[in-house]
Length: 214
Image 1 (tube, rainbow, N blue to C red):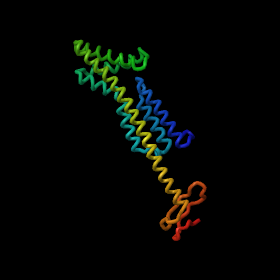
Image 2: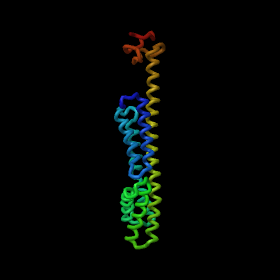
Image 3: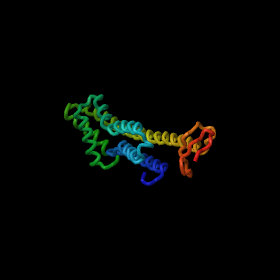
Image 4: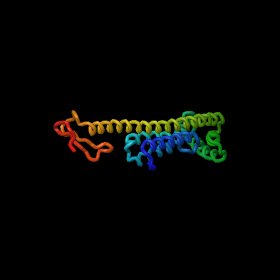
């Protein structure tokens, strides 16, 4: 990957994932998507030998859950508080507008979502108490969405690291077997196939006397 040896490329990908995880707490920054994208690129560049298809599927599930958490967590909280679908739309639009009007991380989107939910629900129902309850649910759902989004990014990262560790353990076990087989044929089964280790010019096999054939 990028001309780097395998351990270094894996470490680089993990560091980039950590940076993306830190960015996931900032509204409008799709942390889970960024973390997942780094893992996907690494998997493709390494031929899916370090990160398998199964690991990538697990990472994708976490990514989808985290990337949409800001929406469904707010929507779930507002619906359970008696809010309407119009209030949910108002919270989403208010969050987008607030993020641009108040260009402060989290603050702008948070204020916009709460104000949008309260305003739309009040215009719809005409009851301030209900509108305030819906706004409180939007506030709670906003923070819960950030927690779920960060948790999803963390799970993607842990899945990626776990896949690297498993592949490294398999490689070490396989490499150890090959080196032992090529370095010492004594006691090996008849015609045991050997792949050459570093410095051995050609493959060898074990003859019936347990000696290496050239």
